[in-house]
Length: 238
Image (cartoon, rainbow, N blue to C red):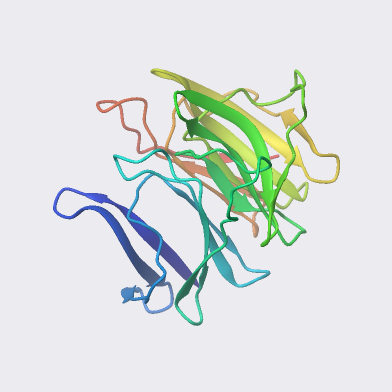
């Protein structure tokens, strides 16, 4: 298996636009160079792997100066080439720019799903699907009671048990954090809260993945502020 890392920020270069590939079998990183066009340097963006179309999908982020990015790019792993898929002009039916959003491959479809994040001065609770050509809003005009509150830095992953998505935690306000868990069913286009009993404490910017072999969700780390950082490991069993 291979994993891709793009951009980010460090204290030497600042905001970056490099691509690194992790080879799990070899246990090594390699720098993947790419000619133009290339996404602008940024951090706090969202990325997801779409194995159906053999591309990595990048959306949003920030470079510390501009408004939050609203562009979407696809990375072809085989050719090592970026393609800017952003519509011009951007239509009204397009997600606002944001940072710290959840993005993951939609199970059983040819799309990836975007949820929430932090927009300009506001946390978001909108849901979108990207099908490789356009965004489709999956957000009701009036949010039902059974819908995750607006948040940034939540974990989002696919859940094989229901053929949908699994979401945990996030920041719902300034120094306010959530510890709730939600399942999203793509067949019914609805959320269900599934938090129950002992679980991870409220947090954001944690790692979340789904172990398809054992049918469990895995949460690691995250934090609440610059001084409260976690290194605990939890599993969610449906």
